[in-house]
Image (cartoon, rainbow, N blue to C red; front, side, top):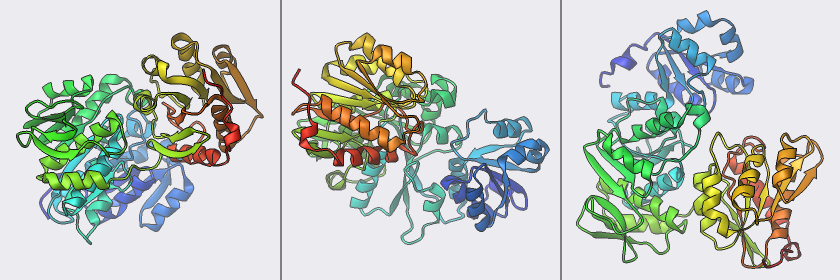
Length: 498
């Protein structure tokens, strides 16, 4: 194993893992193999019990915070990405001068150390939107090229688990990283890293836009930096990136050092002189957002030496994942689309603009983001809006300002806060009994959307907001939508042409 002084000093010393979820559990065995004495803290007793089964000591987080002197016993804190920098536990650790790593930072050090064999090539994907699609496309391309690889990180498989795989052993990692993960991973230097786009998101976690941008920019500190040139903020990062090589991509004719679209094909002018990589037609998801993701995936694959034939095969075989603009059904001439993954306004825009006439289902937790620019952009596509969730008020008020002619229905429960504000801005209110569960709320929302739709419309779930005010996850929200659509009949499509 190669010498890594940061890891070597952990042998025989206590390490605290903050968070007993998937990423936290994945750290336990590698830390134990490094000789660390592992303790996991969380508020979830069942999750702590699972960590104890894996060989870690455990302590409820409230008990640890009640006796902060205990925090000083640890040589390192490895935090799950959900912990904000100002979380009491991390503030206590930082105040005592204890290093704080994210699970990605630990993964990088473990990989560089050779604990699980020679270091891998990391191809990193980040951005406000499109991360999972781009990472999945990249993995499809790598598979088509017969490159032993794994898609990991924020996409679901912890990087540490990917590093421990042996059959086959991945030589290249397609790593999706969120801004949270990048914030806690200052040492990562990927072979190539892409920033797809940057828009307001998670500002409550980061404390402001500049901190959010700085976290995303950490993907560009390796050998090759890949930037979405159609996004002004992402493109501006070229001036501050220390990468040896800059590669841009755009939905348009590419210039030197860029990938783009020309004569109906993805074209490479960065790693070749105008080489055709793949036909643009047939790439899914359709529309500019899908093409941008495909270009970013192609750029990262080309940075890793993948040939054009494999790029074409990988993109052709890629199937869009659930809750990412997936068509759920067509009923009475109305198409129902699940883009529950559109958890911020920037993501919702392309989903709505992919259709000529849209009944939009929106609402949830805006996380500090504003929706005015989105509504101005999509107002002429909207034939109706149905709102749900905690921040429905903000969306309703923005619609009243920028699209006052669009019918707006708010679906609320009797115990919703802010009802009166929504009522002033919405055309109509549907008030369900207090305590109505989230699936029943979604069923009412879908019925209202169907009633606003007419043949030729698309009913699009693109909430522009996170799901955790009502649902377990965006996946739960999407499944709830699909289940509700499955109970509709053509007679439920009752809207009149407007």
